[in-house]
Length: 181
Image (cartoon, rainbow, N blue to C red):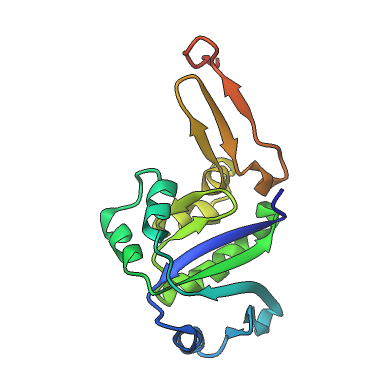
């Protein structure tokens, strides 16, 4: 099982130096990116961040992971991405979500197009991500990290490991989903 939460953010940065410059300029030096570390020295906090070139299938991956909820203009931006960053966090959403919100907000503000939870396979536009990740409502936190996959006969969850819980599987048996009262 994956022991970390991995977040994927495509963006316009033509190369690593441009990404570094945007981090430093936008935050007036409060954040730094060196090696494979995105750091917030004032808070003595940092995360692993991998900077990569463009990926041919990125738009398609976001289209699938977005489950039809990503606006066409967001998908158009993703289709033109020049690079992508992968952020890694300990596998504990309840304790990590404020850090996730802070670091992802920085990448959004320097041009990130949208976000995909790689360790689950669900994608969000920035407005939805910010709403869900900052919510105190457990169901919103669940919707941020967990996806349900299936058809009329069965479905299963993917992503409950972000909460330290196992994924579940449900089968209707007769083709009808059971009613819960």
